[in-house]
Image 1: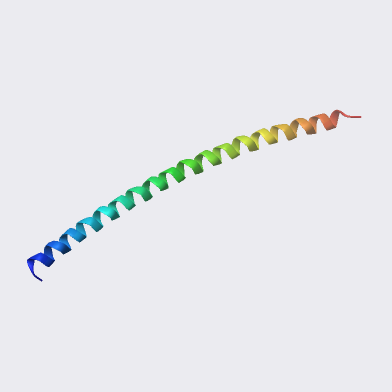
Image 2: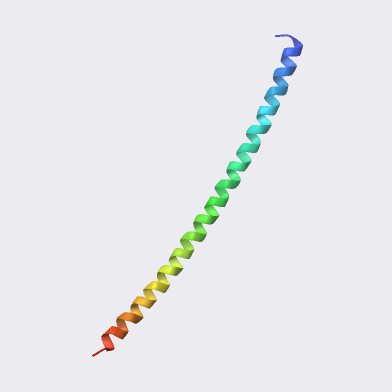
Length: 67
């Protein structure tokens, strides 16, 4: 392999490595965003579930008081 080809190949490999690094950074960022969103949605679901359960308990109490 001559010097010109070797230099072109090295330049190409550098560009590919830079692009791969950017892709990995973006994927890591997306993974972190997904994890945060997932935690938020799970927490939100638990709160809604507790509220619905509280409403159901109050309705049960009201139904028991009816003649």
